Amino acid sequence: MGEFDLIRRFFQRPAADGAEAGVDVGIGDDCAVLVPTPGARWLVSSDMLVEGRHFLSTVDPARLGHKALAVNLSDLAACGATPRGFTLALALPRADEAWLAGFSRGLLALADASGCPLIGGDTTQGPLNLCVTVFGEAPAGQALLRRGARVGDEIWVSGKLGDARLALEVFRGTVALDGLGLETVRAAMECPAPRLALGQALRGIATAAIDLSDGLLGDLGHILAASGVGARLDVDALPRSAVLAAQSPALQRECLLAGGDDYELVFTAPPGAVLPDVGVRLTRIGVIEAQPGLRVVDGRGAAVEHGLRSFDHFSA
Amino acid sequence: MGEFDLIRRFFQRPAADGAEAGVDVGIGDDCAVLVPTPGARWLVSSDMLVEGRHFLSTVDPARLGHKALAVNLSDLAACGATPRGFTLALALPRADEAWLAGFSRGLLALADASGCPLIGGDTTQGPLNLCVTVFGEAPAGQALLRRGARVGDEIWVSGKLGDARLALEVFRGTVALDGLGLETVRAAMECPAPRLALGQALRGIATAAIDLSDGLLGDLGHILAASGVGARLDVDALPRSAVLAAQSPALQRECLLAGGDDYELVFTAPPGAVLPDVGVRLTRIGVIEAQPGLRVVDGRGAAVEHGLRSFDHFSA
Image (tube, rainbow over all chains, first blue to last red; front, top):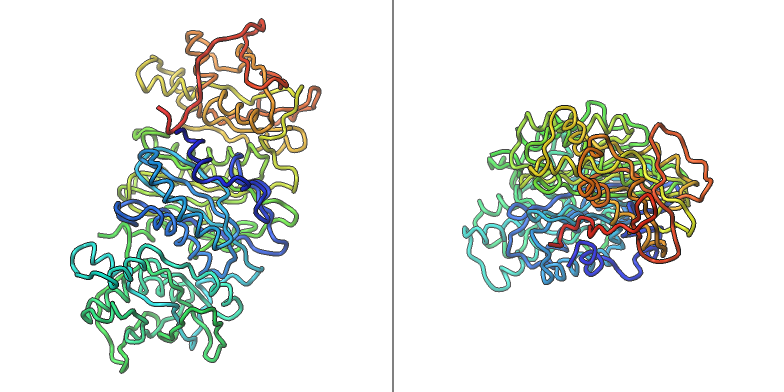
């Protein structure tokens, strides 16, 4: 199987070229050609996934295909964008047909569900590496950014936090789980749901937003730094699954505050803002303050010493 | 040096955010936000470069930075697009400051020269891998595609072919070159010049176009397949450097027909078309015919047996 056969068999739909609304040219030319919506801004994000760092070599390829796109769609969601398409650059050690069939099935299922067609990319031989770049649109001036949080705003988070990190601890052997408990946290790690509907519904409501990829402390820290504010965060208010709630308090805090791989949205909104109901649970977890820094407290308002920090690819 | 320090030190310009025309938000948020030109189409291309396949581990990092962007800009050039920006996803074995300084210098010098700012991306630890995604614009209906070649059109190529492949043969040890000869072919391999001005000037003139990355036979073959036509190609007319012209006829043909890594444009245009003068040499190398297939002939019109094919990442 050659490079172009591989693309045709696993990634190119029979009528992909021109079949999607707004796609003049899809896979198969030097560039894809898209039709921007008049008056909209164009949003772009790119994430690279490396075996052994972002996923385990044993992961189900369909789940990996889902996740490679999901983590990118999550960036569009954090900005309140509507997806328009994505490119996939793929380095593979070899053309493994069973792996490719599963990977492309998971990838394209999420693409279909999100209205985000695969429009082009690249395929090469090399150590397994997945690079997805997504494109989306938002009305001018309505993209959600990190820089808009204001003193007095409430801090909200979608869904539940920490299960993906708990799954990682299971695979590392530091925590024992099986049955439904294992399946719950494993699905959180391998099949995150990008919060696209929520992000779009928060346009004009949220003052700042980010998606949780490196852990709550660091990611919320980006909002605080960009906005020039501080915050108080109630660790006891952080939403968690029953599986995580059954773990030790120290492990819960580590998973909730520094877990990473959550792909939930953290956003700020003025007190009293009417938040959208898109079927995703929203939890108030803190408040923006003028004093710089992030103060972690418990439910009674007492300071919590945690010593945690977010994930960084190049720090020891 | 952490991940975010690395981005700030080597890739983020002090005033990058908002400083470039048409960039509302650059590096540092979940997405970059760009302002499309009213009425224009949006063009996208993505290429991944892997150590040992696309470049040698000994390459000057500044030249590698140049090439990582150049091969992507070449796809925009082939479509006649004007660059608007690019993302870089980078997997690095370690944060090597000297390497990063050189790489980012070469990358950003070409970005500046091409009016194509770095607007975002990703940085992770892993086997060295560079994934660039470029964005450009062209007026609606004017992007150059592979599918428009018509019987009777002449086939043209820019610049000179085959030097990059000759350089590869030197590094493989099958050809001996030194001094100016080596520097000439090495520069062709490591510092290709994307033909952006030519591509834009060919809007409304060329009927089909592609950039040469995998070798002339295969890349011209894509135009023929997409356009449903055949062609006659004069191998003696193919433009070559004095260094390549001094090699054996068999090696010349291999480098010219199947070399790859040329990043010149091949395009078709009706006989008598007035071709643009943008300071790049253009050579007529063949003609589009109704009979399917690609017939390679010499300067006297006699068939040339070559047994060559283009590069494919997954064929033996």
